[in-house]
Image (cartoon, rainbow, N blue to C red):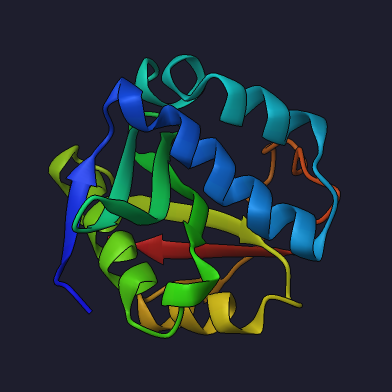
Length: 157
């Protein structure tokens, strides 16, 4: 295995962001309208509002991705994390998670949240390793946009 490099978003990688995420979503769930919206235009829905997207590259091959979505001035959401099945178990998700958390800290965030599903046991374990804890959605927050979401987690920075 070649070393894994973490790289920030550039428009040429938008197709890989969509492809990697559709693979895991279709494997475990069904693709929902918010998925299509975000994955079809990540610049509009993630980058322009102040978020970031990271990619894990092994040489020229894109083997993983993860987004950091700005929710408000002090909170970001870790979202759309995907690692190619052939590269799972190699700490790539952890590297991507650390990159988005570091970016959130550098932007002055006080918290990073995420939504997931309890059936994704390896992902939940990774989030716990990164310091996320199950939490209650704050009062006044809208419900999840995703039917598949049944676990809300939070990392206080």
